[in-house]
Every structure is written in C-alpha cells, then in structure tokens.
Length: 303
Image (tube, rainbow, N blue to C red; front, side, top):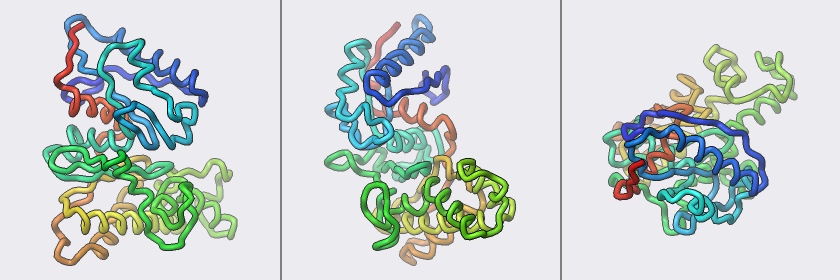
C-alpha cells in the first residue's frame, strides 16, 4: 500500500511459482492481504501492477516475460477485476520504475527524463513533457536492446551486441567467471562460481580489486555510450540509473559519465546529468503505485 506522497504504508512479499494458476492465485492473495490493511475512511485510487516483458496496457496482457511464462497472454487484469472492482493499471516494470522516480525520486520536478533499470536484464522508461512515452505498440524503453557493439555478443533476445549483453548483472557475472577460468587474480577466487554476483563484483570494484574494477568500468562504458545516444536523440536533461547494478558506486558512475560525455555531441556536453535512482528496493512498489497516481486520479473508492 502506497500513500499519495509515495510513502510505503505496507508491503508483502510472496514467493511465486511459474504456472499461471499459481501466479494468479498468489497475486490475488497478496491483494486481499493488503486490502485488509486499509483503514475505514481511506481512499483507494486503484491497483498498480508491473511486469517484465511487453505489457499490452489496453488488453491487460503480458508477453515476453520469460521468467513469468505462466502469465504469457493471460488476461491478467480482467481476471483480477473479477475479484476486485478497483481500477487496475498495468505497465512494464522498468517503465513503472521511471514513473516512480519521476514523481518521488531523482526525477522529481523534471519534465523530461529517461530511467534505466539495470539488473539481470536492462529496461527503461521514457518521460517526455511529464508523460510516459510508450510508443505505438508499448515497446518504447527497451534500452537494454540498443546495439552498442555491432555483431557483438549474443543477447538473450537473439540479436547481437545489445547493451544488456555487456552491462547487465548477468553479463558482469559471466565476464567474471570467464576471467577466473583464465586464472586472473581477484578476491572473487575465494567464491564458488555460483556465489559470484553483481553485488560482490561491485563491492570489490570499489575496494580496489583490479578484475572487478575492470568489469564494472566496462559495464559503465557501454551504459554511458547508450546514454549518449539517448541524449543525442532526445536532448533531455536527466538520465536516472537504478537497479542492482547501480550499486557499482563511484567506479560505475565515473565510467558512465566519462563515456557519456565522450560520445555525446560536443554541444550537448554539460546539458544533462546522470543520477542514481533514489527509490532503491521500493522502486517496483512505488513505481506500480505511481502508475495509478499518474493515470487513475479520477477513479476513487472510499472504504
């Protein structure tokens, strides 16, 4: 439950299974549990939902969410509304995170911005003139699949050279494991291969571990290149970087800044800034609520 000022009143985390019936049952359960926390007299504007993959906001369906394959093409909004009569607003999770940063985070009071969410994959959301830009088929913001190396590494989408293949948490872990197989020296040598994750890589990068530092710098370089392309295209003043990889700290953001300013048009240097997202682990919760605040203010129900 999120208040109108972005403050999280209550939240519950429920492990999910991948079959559609289990996921839907668990979503319905979580909604019912949270509705019990609402006090008499409070207003509920609606229910916000975020999901990976391509979200058809008009049909209320999800496509391409490979880790939630049980929801593929399910009319999830229609199913939930049979149990709960409140307006439901669904969108891509990274787009929702952008909404949250726009209303309550690093992008507050900024009418034009792009937010990157960098975790296992890379997503994005675009805010122009204070409104979310979705594109004609709701696919806008797939920044993780911007080509940064022509004919480069194979990406999970099937294309080659995508940003996600170079700067996501998965890509960083893959690079670390390959380096260790080459017997490169690192603090990561003390870990089992399945214990290596982006959090550890980012931590050791900022502690001076040369291998981890190189991996994080490389990731930052390609993020910066993508940001330069965004700035050249949209001429916006702000790019917000969130998700787990944003824990890369000074090493990551210095590399991003250097690369972005190197590749952006000379006349655009100094016209934009790159900032770390402020919502942290609540980005998904606040972002989904922000979808309601931005689109559903005209619908209210008093309990």
